[in-house]
Length: 389
Image (cartoon, rainbow, N blue to C red; front, top):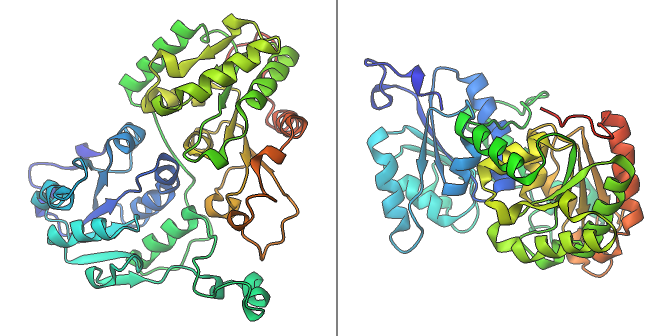
């Protein structure tokens, strides 16, 4: 946090420009939102910037020098918006930037008495916004014009536009500026406590002294999950060739699929002591950042750790099934995307074609090839040399 910017005569309640950023709930979206927050900091360095975040996002943003203060949102429920409004009201924010799309978060800003409220006009919340921004629809993109003309696509449907770009669009609407040609990159950092937590976790796991590949076989939806046994096959092949260890990561809700992927790697020849299930060792959001920052490579589904890796400058191979990659396009030069159907025409949305874009269509060899090409380009370590700092 940047609380050191405030002084006795410069408390946030006395400042002329106080902005509350309502951050996205999902980790991956919250990472994509850091470019917009950094743009606000770049363009308005004198503003007090607060963030309203979920507990997990608070851990994600810990150590990041973008916000002056983070307000952790109370537990949701019928009284959730009222409690959240009470949390931020003492700061007397003058503006709110809603990077969420829900009615309830717009209601929070209104109940908090924030005079200016900027966000996308959707989910029936337009009347709660002072500056409603029109979301991009299919009719706004030329690649969908023919499909709309033929009646095979609805012009009013939300277009598959990256959330990263959408957040920048909202920030620029608040700033009343055009989209920048050089937006800030994704960014995350570790607090001192998170760094120590990571060091201790890697030491317990036996991963402190050599390079390792991180593998994330989980995802929020089953249709996004590449089969766990294929993650195991990739781990076994990469570690056999490069002399690495494998770290399997996931949330507490993903422990079963993480264990399945590790078991598959061992069944295919990876020594058990070189296949570590970090989900069973107390992995947290904070230590996940640190682990991915130390990994030589991440292999993942389209899920939050993929975005964290990009912000930590870690090479990543990402497997996409029937979720259109345009929803989550990010500035990640060290990322390789493996699509279930790389030939899907641009006027089609992968989400509408679950069979054609089934994640099971991605073969292990395609992921290994993408990994080797990416590692060669990134100059990744091999053998027993030390892990990346």
